[in-house]
Image (cartoon, rainbow, N blue to C red):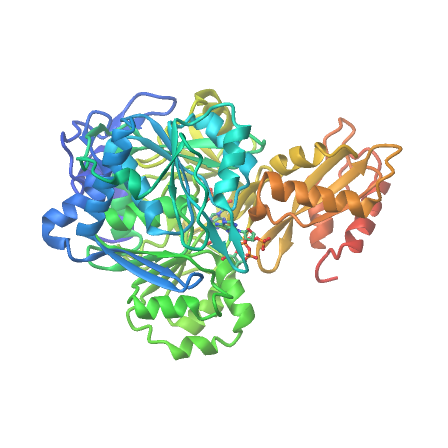
Length: 630
Ligand code: COA
Ligand code: AMP
């Protein structure tokens, strides 16, 4: 069936379409229907029961895939390699789940996971799924404060962490970060499980911490606990406009159905294939396409602990693809830009045998046509830009390679996938003609696998996503659809920025900057960056009578963001200015400052309080090297 026919089949009978897709999943009790009213925006497969771990692990062993590799850990950063078969994975996960159960973890309990890219991170997720516990993975590049915020919101009974992570040139001391976070949080977990890594063995806190291996000793392995289709599989926090992250909830039934559907139809991956999502378990890409998606269909997934460049060189990707016979790779455009910068002619690619490699998928940020073209030319495979968000859990728009490879249009993530009625709206919520820029929205209901609500914040869910355009989910992205139905995602409509494929809130950074005793007022914007897509840049107005030199204040706020949000924020530049440009009603003109920093033409807003401030901003930006190409 063609893409058009598949999309039309969904449009004419969404219930039938998704019930059919649900047959790829093992149910303890099959759902009687696909869509149910319930929650703020409906739910999927609510009366079915299933277990995600069974679907991702045990059933493949039963089907005779026990000896096939489920996970390959390729870690150039620790110079190690390890393979885990499906049979081994089942035993390891059942044992870990048994130990968690013995310490009181049950269906519905929350468990925070704070781990680097090691297979045990996936095992921890799957062990929670086995018990029906709700995991919340926190990215290792976040600092203790961000972890504490998530501990308070998710109120976990347990935290599973590793002793350390390994980044180029430094060890990330997870255990002290964890201790600081627990000290800061008002909620305290009952216990912590610590995976000791040989790069740094952590001191355990008596009475609270147990070691990964010893706490599993002698326990009864746990069987899979069936849960309802609308039972939360996990909560994943993502950046919103404020410092309080949004806890995106994922329901088990829709999660499994949508991932299994997308593995085949988007990524063209089936049982026995090798799939590599070069991301991190702390992001949604890691949840969907390092852990649950490939395993749901019986493929082999790669857990890569390294970087596209520097571990040790710009050939890391090609080596992994060759050595593990990877069929498809999912990465971020920034990683390809990093590789290209080091190896502009793609010389290193020629050193590797990439005959098993069929497709490169890119997402996480806008894929600039130049990068796509380079990758197409050097790799000789289709390069597929696709668009989605933490909230949706799987692609909204893609070139559906598993159905058919549609003509590629550079700069476009191609077409809406079945389940998504994507429309571009004007400010009043009316659909705009093709080619016209507007807010990208999805007509409700959202498909299976997308967020049904926010953790502990149903009102915020409605306010953030459903209230601006009644009847639609607001994506927060701006873009347009061309005459052929291809979508173009151009920018965010809110204060979220995208740094190296990582989604960050400028509002959260502003909250940190304003806490500096010398800062009277501040603003953070995202400026264009040739490697990372965007970089945060701060403006500081200092309190009258401040004696601390400007450079010192800047140094201190840079340290504060690193300390409180984490190194991943990549906040390195701030300029001190006398005042910020504002409208007469007091709104800071961030969009105008972005245009000045990016060297783009702009109109002085009619509502501006004092146009002369824009010259002051331009001068301050020039002093720190912006616009970059000027
Ligand atoms: N734990 C602890 N720290 C982490 C971390 C983790 N899991 N991941 C990143 N960091 C740190 C880095 O060490 C770096 O710290 P530094 O300031 O001390 O150097 C900082 O966070 C910024 O990291 P990163 O954004 O990775 O930038 P980089 O300069 O180290 O590398 C790229 C640049 C382009 C190679 C890198 O960003 C990359 O691989 N990007 C791919 C992005 C991706 O896969 N995104 C997933 C979304 S699909
Ligand atoms: P995250 O929730 O971290 O996955 O970030 C989602 C946001 O990243 C989207 O709302 C977009 O702003 C941006 N994004 C992701 N993929 C793409 C893409 N292919 N093209 C343009 N922007 C993208």
